[in-house]
Amino acid sequence: MYRSHRDEEYVGEPYYGDGSVYVSPPTRTRRRLIVAAASLVALLVGGVAVDRIAAVRAESRTAEAFQDGMGTADRPAVHVRGFPVLTQLAEGRLDHVDLTARDIPADGTTRPLPVTKLTVGMDGLETSGSADVAHARSVQATAHLSYADVSSALGVQVSRGDESGRVNATASLPLVGDVTVSAAVSAAQGNSIAFTNERAEQGELLPPLKSLLDKALDEPVPLQNVPEGLRLQSVTTTEDGIDARFTGHSVTFHPDSSSA
Image (cartoon, rainbow, N blue to C red; front, side, top):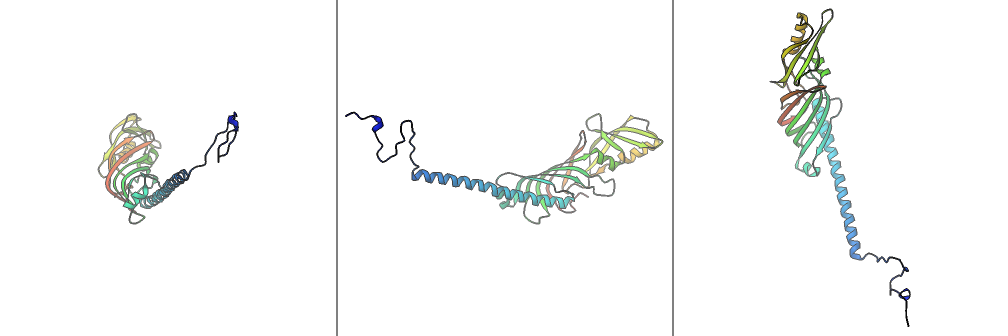
């Protein structure tokens, strides 16, 4: 007797009719694999979360140390690089840390010059010891000095010059007028910025104005509020200020750590 396919039945298994897809329940082995994979993913996600918490704590502690050491009103922004951070902390040293601090107050009584923005890259930053001390194996830093801050320190109006590496300095006196000179900027000894090779740009260099410019530009301006151990390598002019680039080895940041 002929028996159609429709009449056939799967012995011991459900039949869902023509066009249906039969899905067998997962075997015990498959279930174990699924559970193991899910556990591994959860472990990895949890590990990343824990590592990130450790990184945030290290960043906060480093920011606190620098704020105490440099006397900034606001806490610096700190970013710890590398993964995992927990391994670095266990070794007592962070591979690389980037820091950005703003408005570092001037230090010293002779023409004090604040640092508008300080960006620091540190390799081998030690994490052990006191919370208000930070020690780095090597450091590269850039201190940005706005023309407004430079002008306040020198007593004359300083702006970007017409040529690279030069600034314009304008002296003004009531009833006398004003005069503008151009000066080259360069790195000098003692982490100082020197203004040299002056030349008149506009106006008449009358004796009272010349005396004012001589007082402002003849002596190098020391950067007394950079961390001890950093050495000035070069100075460049930008559209809105002067960039002073530093390098250092075995640099310690702590209260009263600014250069003398």
